[in-house]
Image (cartoon, rainbow, N blue to C red):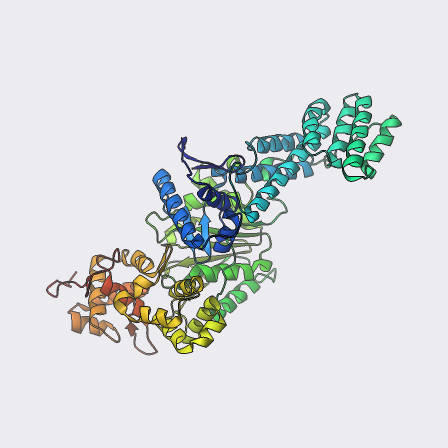
Length: 626
C-alpha cells in the first residue's frame, strides 16, 4: 500500500489508485493517517471530520465510513487488520515506506541529526529528499474539522522547519547561489519570518552580492514596519551592520574535531530515546497484583550488578481479559526504568495470518531509528543487528498477541538491560520466562468498578441492582464489560435495566455483546478454531450437559474417554481458557458462562448465531476415542 497525505489525499496499491469517495470518508482517512499507528478516539474523529457541530447520526456515519474503508483496503492488499477497532476508537497500521508523512519525518530527523554532527552534505540531501515528498498542502481539497485542520497546519510547520534546515546546510557548504534561489521563494511565502531574511542576506553576501544583501535588509524592514509596525530584530541589524563594515558573514556550524563523518543510517541510535508504544489504555482495573510483580522485575535492573541478563515476563489469559491493556499499562508505568527505548510489536497470533519474527524485526529496527535503506536484507543479519542495538540500551519491549514461542524466539535478547513483556492467549509453557502471569477474570467488585468507570457513577447509583446484573452477565470478562459499557455510554437513554434484560437470556447474550468490530463471540471463535475437532466436540458436549465442575474422572465417566485422552482434552481446554480452575485441591475446572453460551449458540465454531438449541453439540453416537 501507498498512502499520500502531503498533498491531495492518495491511496494506491500496486500502482492502482483507490478512490476515496466523499469528503467525510476522505477526512476520516486523513485523520487516521495524520495519527499513524495510533488509536484515534471517537471524539477525535468527530472533531476532525465535521467542521461544525456533528449531526445526530455522526457515530453511525463513522462506523459506516470505517466499514467501507476497511473493505476497500482488504480488497486491495488482503490485510485483515490494517484498519482495526479498539474500545476507544480506530487505528490504521502503516509502515514507514507506506506513508509519505512517515518517510518525510524519518528523513527530516536524519537531516537534523547529521547537521548536529557536522555532516552538512548528508543533512542537505536528507532535507531535500524529505521536501520532495510534498505535493501541495496536506489533504488539499478536503473540508475538515478544526482539530484536523490544526494538525495539518502543524505539518506545514514541520515542512518549513526542514526547508529552513536545508538552507542552513547549503550555507554551511558554501553553496550560496543555490541557497539564494530557494530563499527568494521562502521570503515570498513568509515575508514576516526574520530568520529567512537573515539566511538570504548571508547567501547574497557569500555569493559576492553585498549590495543585494543590503537591499534585502531594506525590503525586510519595509515589510515588518508596514505589516506589524516593528523594526527588524537584533540578528538582522547585526548582519546589516557587518555587511556595511565589509565583514565576512559565516554562521555555519563547525564539524566536531577529529570526529568521523556522521552517516544518516546512524540517526537516533546515539543518544535519543525511541518509543512506538500505542496509547495508554484507559480504565484498567483489577490488575494491581500483576503490576506490582512487574514493578519488582523492573526494579531489579536499577542495581548495575544485580541483573546482567535480560528478563522475560509472559502474560496469558482468556480472550478479552485485557492482556494487551495490562502489558501497555505496565510499559507506561515502567518507562522510567527503561528510558532509552520502549518498543511494541503485534504478532497477530489470533488472526488468520500470524506474523513471524521476520515480519516484525524491520518494524522494531525502524522504531530504533534505522531508515529502510540501512536494514539488512538477510533475516539473520537483521536479528544480529537488533540484538546488538539493544544490548547496551535500557529497553522495554512488548511483544503482543503471540500464538507460540517460535514466533518470538529470534527476538529474545540474551545479555543487556532489557525487559520483554509477551502476551498470548495460551500459556507459553516452552517460553523460558522469569515470570509467568495468568490474568484471571475480574472479581464482582472489579467488574462493578470497570462498569462504573465506563457509564458513570450517577447512572450506576440510579440502578445499582441492574448494574450488578449487567456485570454478572458479563462474567468478569473485561471485553464484555467494555462492550456493554460502550453501548450504555453511547446511548444515554438506554437504561441499565434494559441492558440487564437483554443480557439475561443466554440464547441472545452474545448477540448483545457486539459493538462495532468488538465481539465476544468472534474473540471466542478465534480460540475455538485453534482446537482440534475432538476437543471442540468434547467442549460442546460439556456445555450442553450443565456440568458444574469438570475433572479427568468426569470426562472418563460421563463421556467414556480413555484416561490419556481425557487428560489431553482437559489440558487443551484449560490452556485456551475454555475451562477455568476452581478452588484448591485436586484439579477441578468449570466452564465460563460466556464460553457455555458460545458453545450453545454458535454452530461450526462460532461463525454465526444458532437459530435455537445446542447447535454445535455432536451426535451422542459419535466416537470419543480419538
